[in-house]
Length: 171
Length: 411
Image (cartoon, rainbow over all chains, first blue to last red):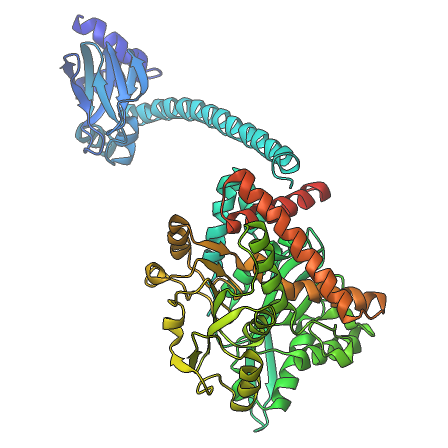
């Protein structure tokens, strides 16, 4: 992938609504990172390097101590946005499922821009807020589905027990 | 003295697993209906103010008014009362009485009170809880350190506020609406339970069998007398001050007369002394713990040589010891069935009070026999069909009855 193709993808993911100059400011603060298949890009519990834009390839998200893959995510997307904003450790690990190209906006660079009151950096935050809101919405739906499934099995269990009280457990 | 909520719950949960109870149903059945904690302040004889804490826990009312003792003891608290209240729910269900379970009391050592202080304390307690007890609500009964006189005061105080209500308590004096046969009811029930088991298991009769009885209070002494009358050989008995032993069998009527005079069985002529702990380890046919809870434990269970344990006391066997006895093939007839004779005749007393009709003692005893016999037949069936212990069977039967009543009324 050529640098110009790569920066076009980054603009699409991270710089919507930014002026060309503002986008340039963000792009200049980023560094390209490549990952071979199988490489662990983020490790759960580690301090974050910064925000990763997955430009090309596919990654898997998983929790330590479990082989279960929580999510498989394909380019283009952003990763590490929670850690960037909270400055806390990564909440899950991310592994390259295929060879991947990333572009890294380091925490140091990002917070430097914020200190300089870069409008571009604040616009990036607005975009990340939208990403987070969408992901939260998906999680809400999943939660509702899971708790509904739980409740209905409890209801069945209860009515089965009520029945058994009069059949199996009546002496 | 007694096991708290957790020990009772252990046996409950064991039955719950057999029945495949869901967590939500289990929670509903364990959770008490109402817990009440009240201030009981009185003027002491010295003129000083004495403040005590009274408790009443009402566990379940799906099968009828709640029933359970009131005890005056320093260890009384909500946890203890809740454990014993739930035990009353299961006990009344096992013998199929139309009752739920309750328990309560006052945290006080009554030995430190004069008779006048005890009466004022009892009346004040009634003033504090009269709104939640009643002949159709919750009917207290005697328990540790409370007796027929205390019940008479409760009846009187409650009647002042609600009109003539003898059915508000049971265990009253026979001269004040008490029932004939109530005093000896628990001891009689213990022996009836044993006879049902012996008959069913093809193990003959009481005559010629040997017994060791720990505890010679109301329950132990009446059980001893009934066993003796039936030709049983009671080789040892004990009370808090120590025990007596005679391998040829103790003369129980004479021992009861001796204890009345001496306030202990210790030193009974023609017997050797034996400690409370050693009594449990005697090689007898039947061991009858009739005093404290938690006396058969992990520590002494391996040395117990009796072939059958008749639980006249509440919770005499700890859960771990119970498991060991089961592995060794020692049959345990459980407290919630064996000592249910007391609450059964309390039910007859309540029924007589409500009918304003008095039963002859023969009728009381015949009805008690019927309840103990029917309950045994049900338990034995569950033991055979489900291959569980008598204790688990008793809880399974009780949970089933309470569960059905709850479902039919509507959760």
